[in-house]
Amino acid sequence: MTMIFGVPMAALMGQLLIGLINGSFYALLSLGLAVIFGLLRVINFAHGAQYMLGAFVALLLLTWTGVNYWIALILAPLIVGTFGALVERTMLSRLYKLDHLYGLLFTFGLALTIEGTFRYFFGSSGQPYPTPPALAGGVNLGFMFLPIYRGWVIVASLAVCIAVWLLIEKTKLGSYLRAATENPVLVQSFGVNVPLLLTLTYALGASLAAFAGVLAAPIYQVSPLMGTNIIIVVFAVVVVGGMGSILGAIVTGYMLGIAEGLTKVFYPEASNTVIFVIMAIVLILRPAGLFGKDV
Amino acid sequence: MSHSDATTPQAPATVPAAGRIKAVILLAMLGFLLLVPMFLYPIFLMKILCFALFAAGFNLLLGYTGLLSFGHAAFFGGGAYFTAHAVKVWGLSPELGILVGVAGAAGLGLIMGLIAIRRQGIYFAMITLALSQMFFFFCLQAAFTNGEDGIQSVPRGTFLGVLDLSNQINMYYFVLGVFLAGMLAIWRIINSPFGMILKSIRENEARATSLGYTVARYKLAAFVMSAAIAGLAGSVKSLVFQFATLTDVGWQMSGEVILMTLLGGIGTLIGPVIGAGLVVTLQNYLATSPLPVTVITGVVFMVCVLLFRRGLVGEFYASRIGRSLGFKSDS
Image 1 (tube, rainbow over the protein chains, first blue to last red):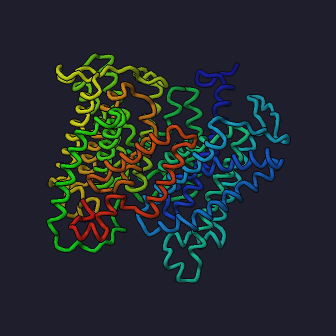
Image 2: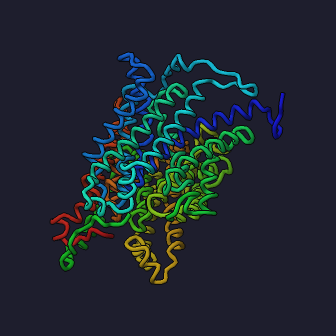
Image 3: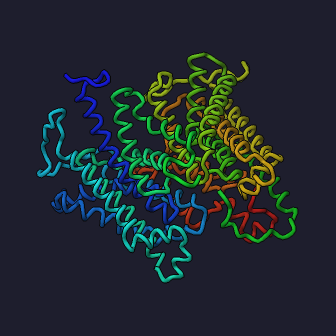
């Protein structure tokens, strides 16, 4: 068996793959958080709950109405995005003029409520979501065995990340968004409907989380608690990357996912904490984060 | 947390009523606390006292320094673990065990604080949350915490070799004493020149810096003190319930203490105590219902943030009646 750095090549590649997949979710989720924070200045604690909602909507669509994975991949983000827009319009928008911490506290309460409700109806244990038939099986790459679905997750999340980046950096809508991030009052005085922009942004962030949730459904179990565990890690990812840049959030997400995967190979005991340790080190050396501007 | 939303006009010339009312309420509460174990289940009361102290210590940081920590469970649960270990494995007396717990929590606070105060506001909250989650995983894996089992059947021992704490009523008065000492310490801190500087940092950090104060050092000191009080609360709780488990270090606990403080009134001395009493009672009441407590907690959270951000006590102070009695919505 081929050995690299004293570990079998297959094990190393396997963990790298898992790291890359976790990184895909970190990237998608921290991207959503960064987009929301950029404009609304709200840390969306409910992001994990929205990720969980995405997975659950896909599962319920499948079991109740027989809607397949591919349609759920479009439909679930739309449903969760609409829900997000409603929350933003009716409640969250009242908090913008206050200290930003209230947004965090509100979305924390929202997350608790959503998760508690789902636990009440579906219990705490996970439910499996079948891998779509078109993506079942795997391919042998020679040095490792790649399950097709996992490859798809990496490709899909990369594609969505790039699409969102293009949307924000290269389109007219994105330019409004970036301008409103800099100075919402001025942009509004130019006749741009900033409140609508805020609602759309929150809906976009929520649907990104839901998209990640649908992608995650066949890999992890669909459970009401799946969101909270990941969101705290994503917070650390966001602190490391600094929320100043969209690209920074994406790159940091993948990097830390891979770092976590490598830790599983070389020092498994620390795999749960490695991202937090990296966060602490980054804070000591570069408080603004790797890509951040403001402290 | 800055009080940008507190647009209350200045209270009219302070009417002495507020001072007298406070004194009367204080005495009434003291009497109540001394007598109440005759009517209510002592363990339940001790639980409230522990959480009240925890919330009051947390409020020292949020209400008086303006720093929202989302990781105070680490100190509360850390204090519980350290004390439980010291008492059970090292065989220390309860007072020394509590000392170990408080010192451990303060040390933990120093480390976390040094890292977290490098960022402000919302980042501070996320960093403390992440660091406490790291501590959670540490507790999950470390040998002395026994992982999922926790440290069980912790002996209560005898306080100063005289007072047998295995007696429920003795234990209650011991916890009450610790609680009052802790509250007195908090009151002393916020009414000292040091406390004034903390409030000035809360109100306007840049200005405090321009006046020559090393803001970072004051924040760190407040963080460590708050951590020590949270640790004290956790230490005592581990003696009351005779176990220390992962529940006390989880992020849910950090959320609960925020809720208690928010519900009672951020930046008021008595608010967190009342908030803790309400939340613990609510949890006790809902413990048998099939509905997860988090649904209710979450809704209360949202309602508090949307409708009454000053909390129950804060809203009363700021109301017309409160103001006419001479209460100030701050401190």
